[in-house]
Image 1 (cartoon, chains in turn blue, brown):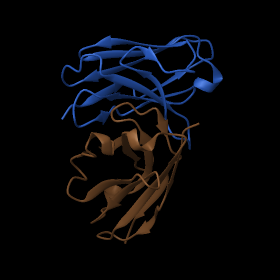
Image 2 (spheres, rainbow over the protein chains, first blue to last red; image 1 turned 180 degrees about the vertical axis):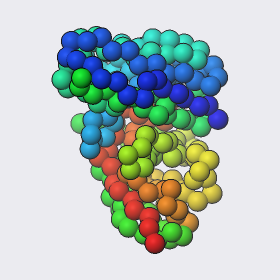
Image 3 (cartoon, rainbow over the protein chains, first blue to last red; image 1 turned 120 degrees about the vertical axis):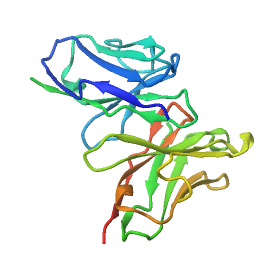
Length: 107
Length: 118
């Protein structure tokens, strides 16, 4: 099974900050990597798929990069509505898996 | 607008069974590949399993912790996805989300809560 490891597990940031979240796969997953945002008490929503393609309707301050085993989600100019938990998910293997999540809260 | 509405959650004892349903609308369900994702209380997301469209054989895949105990099925006549859960354990407790997509999940239901406790 492919293990997904996110870092950090949590971070504090201010509105306007640039935030970077890392996701590492236990083996090569090419660009089969997706990112989701989840706000408290809500279902997750898709932000980015195929490592760097922005889902329709997602603000352009969100971006994704990486391939192989190392990936990054970047939020430029953090907005109040961006305080949430972010998950990466690999779609390379038949058995899908998520990272443990990164919680972004207000400094 | 695609809408997924789960139901069937509740409180059961270890070893008991439960069937979750997911009513889909605004989607060509016959061609939709669907999945279930769960979230234990205060924990992260965990993929449970998925099912291809009937047109693609309706085959299923399951995560190791649920394989042999859970079964995903679909009813094209009612646009409904099911998750039959047998031999439930305390580790199976949490919110269960119905999602559209086979490996990238673009639409999520609101979730239904399963409690497993003696």
